[in-house]
Length: 251
Image (cartoon, one colour):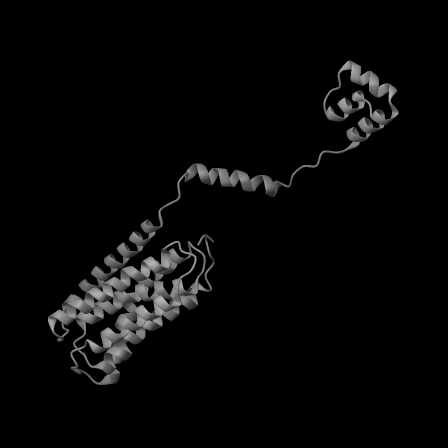
């Protein structure tokens, strides 16, 4: 291959200067190369491949910096606090503070349930790739045992009548918090432990209000009517979240 042939090869697809055009006219190999290159049809990229970068650039322009994950936690905890206040107002005419256990025990357990409410929201929304089932299970067991063993021991109503009333109240008070948690969970990738933590966090709203409101402090009543629905909400959150579409697959 002569130097002129190399220059023709480098200039394919561009207008040839007069000296190279003269060389192509006198060189059969270069003439065939140029004619074959000109016969090629340009291949257009699929429209989808062009649309994806444009959409990504628009998203980056609208949100140049990622939203801190703790803002979503604050939003969820704020919703819990607001719904807890509304629940307290609804229970006030019936008597909000009817727990007959020692005041120190009532306060400590209330703080433990509040910690569960906030901690569950953090576990559900924090951007970590792995959530330990052992951590969720251990914390759940500690809270459940503390609530059952921290009662006054006083049985006020029959077991069935008291259980039905408290279960119904618990589920009603926790319905909107659970909905809020599920909305937040859709914004990140599905993870079973996150879903359970979110359900327990939302259920802590009803658990807290029942803890201070319910006068029945027997262990059987607390286990069946307070802790039972709380655990059920954790399982319900797992079931519902597994069937919800995910809006964002980030961790």
